[in-house]
Length: 189
Image 1 (cartoon, rainbow, N blue to C red):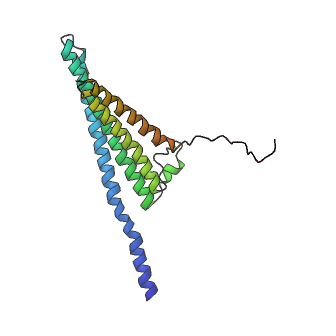
Image 2: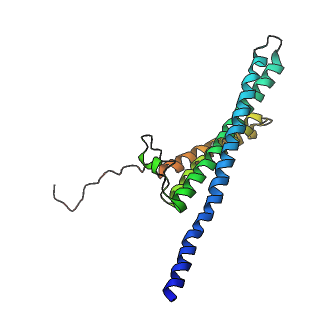
Image 3: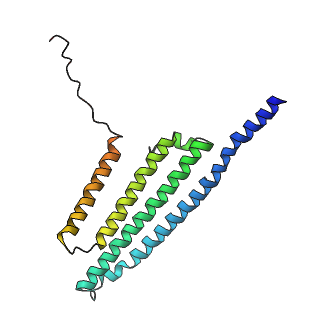
């Protein structure tokens, strides 16, 4: 009796992991929605390129339209990056809690970003894409920044330096620098 009850409880407990499918499906739907939104934004931006080529557009109006177009490009990139985060999250949750994705393991185009074997792999993949989203957002704000004093320029430069440091640190763990083997002083020459 005890073994049957214990076995039934353990089976129910193990199968409770399937609730993760709700997060996987929802993340996939949200990812597809973001891909759709970013693609529609890109389509309308391309349609408006004709306005930029107009000979009637001169001086400040052309400069303003150019700034608007660059902002739209940054927003499109941001949308695609967010869609990618949601896709990686869905794939990672599925691999961690439900089952390995056989096609991912046997694919010729193996991507380290899409192969998730542990929670740390998922966190690392998401962190890289989220860092890229933050960089894109910083770029978006930097475009609209008004430089009213030299300090504003220093703030921009400081932000760029911090972004460079963040990128360096995020990649430093992946590719540790090879240490030269120092000669052992106890060995005779």
